[in-house]
Length: 553
Image 1 (tube, rainbow, N blue to C red):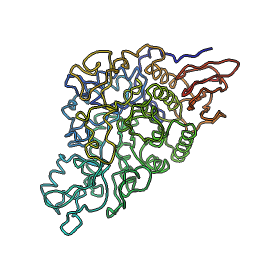
Image 2 (cartoon, rainbow, N blue to C red):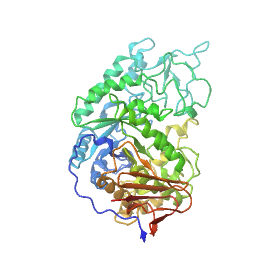
Image 3 (cartoon, rainbow, N blue to C red):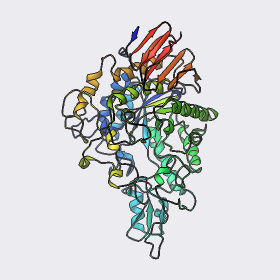
C-alpha cells in the first residue's frame, strides 16, 4: 500500500504542564523577535507580535519558546550588544509587554526562555561609557579588558587575537589604551575576573526570574573566562579553529565556576527553571562539562548541526553525543537551524562540506526533501530538540538579498564569519498575501521573496503532506508515543548502506540518507513518513532522502 505524509488533527487545548524534568525531552521553539510578528506596522517584529501568535505555537505542539534578545540595545549586532539588561528596547515594546507575554505563554502551557548575553555588553552600556570617561587605571576599566598596546608607542594591539567578525579583536581608544572585543567593536568583553561582573549578572538573573521566565539561553557561554595573561594564539585564520581546537579565549575551565554560582541562584526558584548553553567546544565531551549536575541543564549540540546528511557521519555524532551526556546525566539536544546559520533546507540543497553559512540556493527540491527527513530523524532521537522559526514551513535561506539591505555586522568587516546570517533572519510569512505576507501591516525590515506566500502558514495549514502539517504531526506523535522523548540510548538495527535504523522500545525510525530508494523491513504500523513509501510482503520501499516512523505495537 502507499503511505502519504498525513496532516495532524487540530490539537486539544493544552493546560500548563508542570511535570518534573520537563526539559529532558522538551521541544523548544526559537523566536527571533524582529522577524516573527510585527504588531504596530513599523516593519520590525516585537513582543506584542509574539504574544499575539502564541496560540499558533501552542497548536504546533512545542513545549517552550526561546526569545532572542529584546533588551535595550543600539542594535549593532541585532540586540546581542546590550546597553541595559533590565529594560526592553522600545522597538520591541516595554517591560509590561514582556510581562504580558510571559503570563499569556504560561496560560497556554508554554514556557519562556530568554537570551542572556554575559560575554560582552554594548559600548553604550553605562559601565563602558564610565570606563572610557574615567581613563587608564580607573576601577571602571577593570570591568572590561583594557590593555596598553605593543610597539614603540603602543600602536599595536596587545595580542594577536582576531575578532569572530573579522579583523583584530582589539580597538584603540583616544587615550591610547586598547579594549578587547571578540565580536564587533561595539561589543566590549566583560572581565569576569572582576567580582562586580559576577554580582551584576546574578542580580540580572534574579530580575528576570522574578518576572517569571522559565530559563535562560546563555550566549557565548564558552567565552566568559580568558586564559591568564591573554597569551597570543599564534597565526592567522583563527576562525577556522573555532569549535575545533583549544583557544585561549574560549572554553576555559574557569567558566564552570561561574555557572555553578548561577545554578545556586536558579535553584532558589520553584518551577524547574533551566539554563541552556551556547557553547562551541572542540569535542562533544567538552560540551558535556557544561551540563554537569551542579551547572547548566542543556547545551546546544553544534556537532550535530554541523554534520552532513550522511548516515555514517550522523550515526557517529549521535553515538558520541549520547555517550558524552550519559556520565553527567544530562539530556542530549538536537538542532538543525538557528539565527546564526544557513537554514538546513538550503544547507542540504548544496553539496556537503560547505559549512554552515552558504551563499547558493542549491537544489531547492532536494534540500526540502532532505530537510523534512532530517527533522523526523532529529525528533526521534532521545533528548530535547530545538526548532527555529520558519523551519516548520520548510523555508529556505534567502541567499540573494541586495547588499544595501544587509545588516549582519560581519558582512561589513570583510573577514571572519561570512556575514550572510541575514538570509535566515528574513521575517516569516503568515498569509498568502499582504505587504509582508501577514508579518505586519507595514512591510518588513528585510525584503521577503515572492515565493513566501505559498510557503506561508495560511497556505500550508490543513494541507496533507505540507511541511507544516508534517511538523504538527511529528510533534503530536512524539507526545503520544511513550518511547519517544527523554532517554539516553538507541538500539541500532541492521540497515542498507546510507540508511540509519534504530529502535526505542516499540518505536522504530528509519532514515534513508542515500540518493536512491532502498528496501527495508516493514517494522509495523507506519506512524509518519517524510515522503511517500510503498509496503508489500513485509518489506518497505523508501525513496531517497526519506525518514519513516513505525510502531511495532
